[in-house]
Amino acid sequence: MAKKQIKITQIKSRIGYSKKAKATLDALGLRRMNKSVVLDLNDAINGMVKKIDYLVKVEEVK
Image 1 (tube, one colour):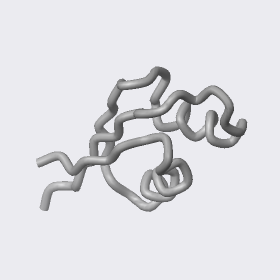
Image 2 (cartoon, one colour):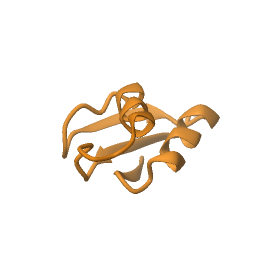
Image 3 (cartoon, rainbow, N blue to C red):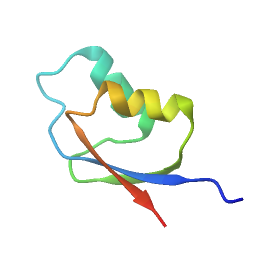
């Protein structure tokens, strides 16, 4: 069974948000707006995405 992957895209600027939100974006590998990363879905990634759902867009990769 293949691992599920998600594509995470930063849709809002990090300016004006908390240090924790900025650190979470960095941990996910998102450095600039409109840039995307594809990651394997696990509990840690899922938790990070839920914490900053107002800054990112998430899509399932087939």
